[in-house]
Image (cartoon, rainbow, N blue to C red; front, side):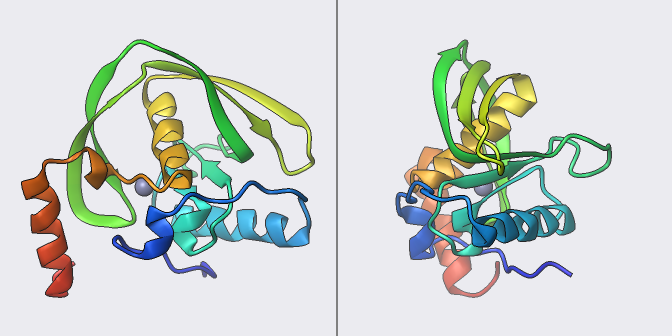
Length: 166
Ligand SMILES: [Zn+2]
């Protein structure tokens, strides 16, 4: 059973900038494990700590959502240091139910950060994987897919959410 519930927009934690992680202690390792379980259960291909109510710069990514082994990537304090190309594609988000939005993203990126052992990570990603990273890192900066949507689409979502339909 996943230990964490997914926070739904417009919860405040999803609109705030998350804090850098100073020490990778047991709490952070446990959080990463809980997030991974929650992501697989959803199922999803990525999850950021603010989505489980923790305002920390931590993401988990698995573009196969656990269907294939060895695809899980956990990044502490991820940062996009290089971007190349542009591509528009539709995206969904576990924190924004029943909504898909066209989002323009870089086609190729270079992500830097550290793993749970504190070793430096340098990940080159393109296509779908690059899109997931950009989506999850957005969450750490208080940005969700609705921020890329039209005013109309955003207000329809908020109305549905207010009425408890999603
Ligand atoms: Zn999301």
